[in-house]
Image (cartoon, rainbow, N blue to C red; front, side, top):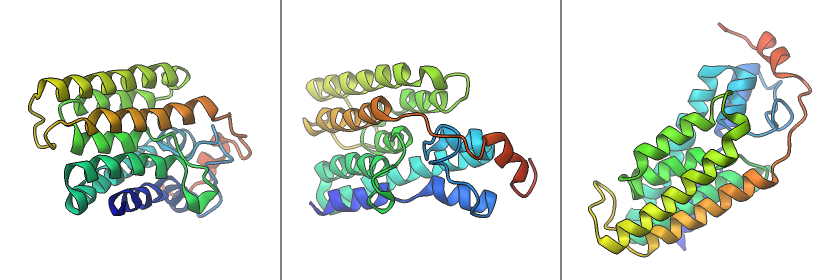
Length: 211
């Protein structure tokens, strides 16, 4: 239980909100600008690429940190529970009316710690879905990646293959992958387009510092 609570709290860390506050002096709300999603892709569109990459890195880091702490608190099962809880916290943060991001980057951090054998593919997908070119296809890309994550974790568990620095594969691995994937896909399926008032272009023009 403790690892789940800790993981959820890690997931609620508002990295995108913090980036918007620093980049625009508090004038931008990513829930109202661009796509309306407080995540790395929208931060790239509204605030600029470097801010978006910063949000991406921070979201990956909080997913990974949650898993590391979960493993210290409750072993391998605690790591898996904390990782899924971090994805849940990122998507449904209690501090922001349960209006969060889509959880892809946080799940990358989860994979880096709990399933490093799959992590390279997960990193590629996270990068692709964060780019403007693939934004309209991000649901399909994420669904395919989620299926691969779940299938891969099931195979690794059943065959007992090595998992690099991650915990030895157990039944908890595919369960956690399936749970995190379900949360992410639900967010993709239910997220609407946010209003662009103010528009991304206007925000970029107003934000301080080099462009």
